[in-house]
Amino acid sequence: MTNYHMHQLPNGIRILYYPADSTISHCCLMINAGSRDEADGKDGLAHFIEHLLFKATERRNTNQILNRLEVVGADLNAYTTKEYTCIHASFLKEYLERAIDLMEDIFFHSTFPEEEMDKEKGVILDEIASYQDQPEEAIQDDFEDLLFKSHALGRNILGTTTSVNSLTKTDITSFIAQNYNTHQAVFAVTGNYDFTKVIKLAERYFGQVSENNQPKNRVQPQNVKGEIIRLQKPINQTHCVLGSNAYASFSTKKTPLLLLNNILGGNGMSSRLNLEIREKYGIAYTIESNYSPLTDTGIFSVYFGTDVEKAEKAMKLVQKELQKLRDKKLGTIQLQQAKQKFIGQIALAEENRLGLILSMAKSLMDFGKIDTLEEVFAKINAVTAEDLLEISNEIFDPNQMLTLIFEPES
Image (cartoon, rainbow, N blue to C red; front, side, top):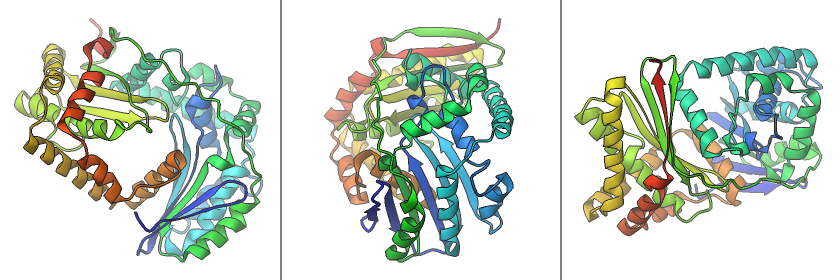
């Protein structure tokens, strides 16, 4: 990651290039606007706009947009998070200009025709219904709603049936005007190009975009107190999420918590939760922990789903593992092995070049720079057993732990 290049256009859009000796290229256009930026009652607006970007522009209809890259075998997709909207593409090296042209067109020249809005509302309502039919997905959304009670971060990214049906074209144009800040937009590409060519193309297409430097008006959420909430649902298994507010992206405790999460229930089959609850007792098919840092807060959670009669034991075993991390420091060998595992996973993740360029774009957006692998590894290696013990007692404090349980209807 040491040889990336960055250039900023006069309108504020930053261009990021990461060389790769490959016939396949990947690029993305990311903007600092997500569901947390929606006004009250406009839940799902950022995601709705993301869908509509593919429908019509001043120059193209839906078919022309969808075929522009697919006709050359390329892949075009998008996603919305609580803080970002992103379009990304993967394509053969020679089609970079085609990808840049299309991304600039759909991001900055979409027309949002009423008939397409009506159709896409139906698609999103089906998407909402699909998620509601998956308790392992629905419980995560409901958990975050409780964790960020009465705050925009708690809203479901998809919105609700009522809110989506109420969205108007005025809502869309207002959101874009307020949130599509060109100084908080990054176009990133990885492939085998001369950097001057990337800049030339970026200036040709993105250089014509009007500058928008509207300030962000985000409000930091308050931490919630721990409680246990049980809800009956038409399901066959018990599903549970427990967790708490956690550290923001800028916190010096982010890296230690990422390492701690990996030890507890992160990637791989050798996490503590997986070994103890799935492998030793055969209780849960899926058990995992997650830590998601945001710009001014974070989310830590543990999820499992299991049969009703096994749920109480599963919960006790999870609490036992959390207690171990609060009570006892990791030994020298345990800590070193945990670091080696985490570092290896990060190094392997670099093989996913699309994931890498998305991560780099987000890092540039958040921090104005991108850490090299060596810098990332140095931060991990600097973590001490005392750091992990202190963080375990902060994040895994039972008094701050919120628990949401979906139980089958009796």
